[in-house]
Image 1 (spheres, one colour):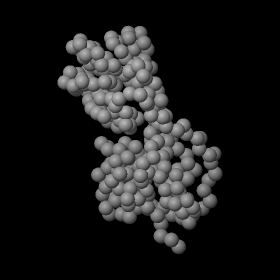
Image 2 (tube, one colour; image 1 turned 45 degrees about the horizontal axis):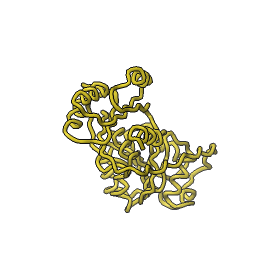
Image 3 (cartoon, one colour; image 1 turned 60 degrees about the vertical axis):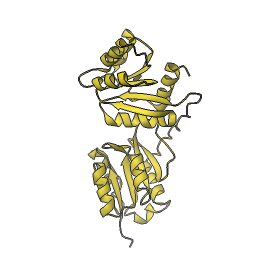
Image 4 (cartoon, helix red, strand yellow; image 1 turned 120 degrees about the vertical axis):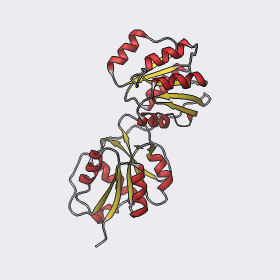
Length: 267
């Protein structure tokens, strides 16, 4: 009998790590859990895993970066949140999984990463049948006809900043970040940017007030506001902040971000 396989399940969300364990109960596969990037790196050094299932954002890094560093040793499956179009053809990344994903979808992705047909040799029992996963929308085509942008993005959640950077891809040549409204004002006043993307709710100073302060200093940089609250969208439509701006309700898709870019930058 072949020795069991080992895979790494890396996610700050313990429920996702547990779900992967549940999906593999019918197989002779050891699941090694990692809740952060340092723990992930330590496992790579000590163990000999056959594959890694990694969340797109892990602590202060991304699954992309971990794949770049460790994919010579093992294949990667990257988990991404629903509503974000982040599928990219990168070396070492075998498959993407959109959360929430089903058992069959997960097993198919893992089998592809290990080598088609490999997983069946580690089967302990007949896997439960499931409905096939829904087909996913391919990534939107790159924007054309505009020079690369210098962007300032403000959000108190690092994963959102990582997602924005990934969405914009090669359309930016500079991507600066701020985690508070005060930091947004400071950076906007000290540099020249083509675009500001600002969360509405941030510590100490809201996105509304930060942009108003920036406008008061004579800076007319276009702004895309974002928030997960419907009331903020209604407030935006009622008050219409000064200057060129748009509003995106979280979570938004890549095509929605690009549509706002086209409008606000007059593509």
